[in-house]
Length: 124
Image (cartoon, rainbow, N blue to C red; front, side, top):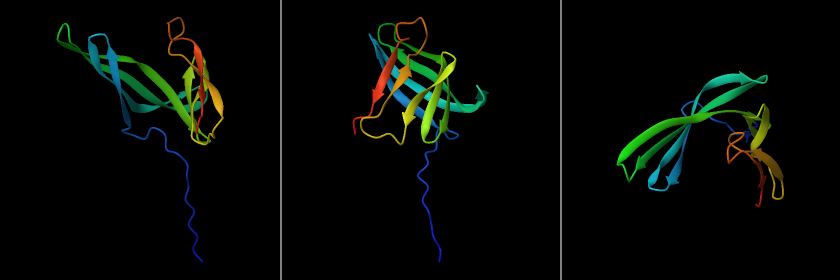
């Protein structure tokens, strides 16, 4: 008898992975590209390093701009993606979460207007 088991484990940030998100400001629009670039060890965890780049067009000055906004250090463990911020890892995604589950997320940069923590709540 031959038995086949399907593994539902997630693959996080494989080689070549890139995400694009719209970027809109006053008179400036474009996108943010988040791209897997390599692996690195942080806090004893082998992490996927993701580079965040902004690509914009300014409608007032009619100029294009590209800049690296920063890097994220992430890893997947037990169907949960963690990211490194403020000297510790925070849960970003939980692929096994159920409705009603929640967790805290950390803001972008300490000391900036976006440095506070927030909560993710799974609604379905």
